[in-house]
Image (tube, rainbow, N blue to C red; front, side, top):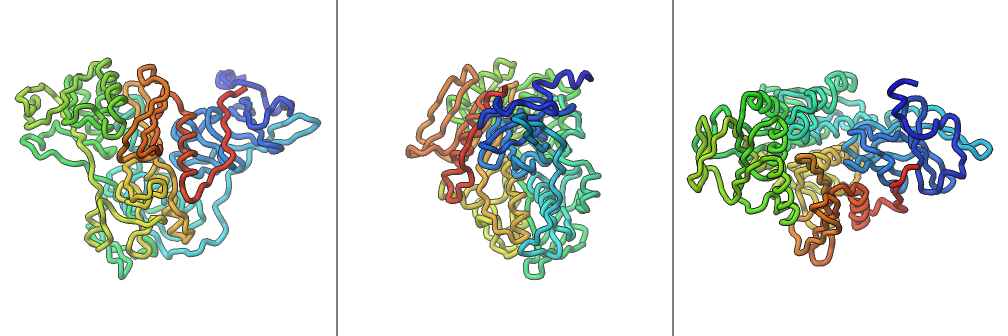
Length: 522
């Protein structure tokens, strides 16, 4: 047995497990050769799946089985229980599965089930070509889904970025903190796009859409004809308009190139000022402290992230940062920046070698607006993510869609939402007419404090806390007129998954039933 195998737990499933020891709705962790495997039972049916999520390696045994799906407790990736096919992001790869055979009351896990081949069934429509404008989470997910669904026509991805699609949340987390290599941040290597025949054009900009002729015009004077078009242009950082905002040591963070430049400057910096006490600003503050850099956070609010997380959790987040040496200057703004620091509206001066601006983003909708598409605080789409122009879809930070749970149109700037919308948009470009009904989800990690958030609450009139925020063991429900709108959890991953299922059942198209969890792995 190798050193790696020595870390495997539980029985060797090739040798068999007595069927009587596998309770209905339970899972047993063991292994097949050098792979950690979960063996589970639902009624008379047995299944064997990989014990680690292919996204970040989350423990699937601590997740949730809902109908024919199994969900990761960490970031809510969803897989088909029988085939392992990935159904919902953030995972991009399938969960491995094995065949199970029962002989004389003993269950044996045998060979790996081959990954599902590309769909061979005909789709309602097959566009002559598909153009994706945007090289982020939504665009990448759409391109991958199109190929997985069996679309064989030309796919062109127009990306203004210098790098291939990346795991954007980690640009302010592990990569910025120096705990993850650069190649780890890419969603796929260049060889993947070559193998899948996806034409990714980096450093390229679309400048005009001709919806009548179904053409995209690029900045290099080239134009592309599309059968279907996906707009996934994302969001752009809000820029400071104060003296010194254009100095070389002032940084924004949106792309891998931005994060790379920030890391380079951080290596020769001792002190920093982060302007903005939102998620991006506080994740940057945490990462810079990990690098040993002094951090001051400036923001106009009284409590960081209060608008999203509420005063109790926002205050606790501040205390965690302060325990790690971060100094806050809340209720203030920066009025000017110079080579050696910043000046606040109070007249206070803060010395800094590095300034990071994180004061929000705006949806990049200029291209859509100039094309005459319907705009309302974002690019308006229907429940199928189609815009006011036939054959033109939108996904990600720019899309404002009708949310069945709240009865309102919403726009959400979350990475997982963008990926899931890209997946749905891809199928709808092929004529599937699949409503987008995924529950919004995001996570943040700051100084080791992980917070997961499920749902969407633009406002609330009551916050209900079960457990203790200070003990980092709680479920926080955001209520409006007695109805739960969103849930935040700390160290209660299973509660977050259950909340997701609860919200799904509130929609007009409930797609889950018979939820059970495997919180105890034998």
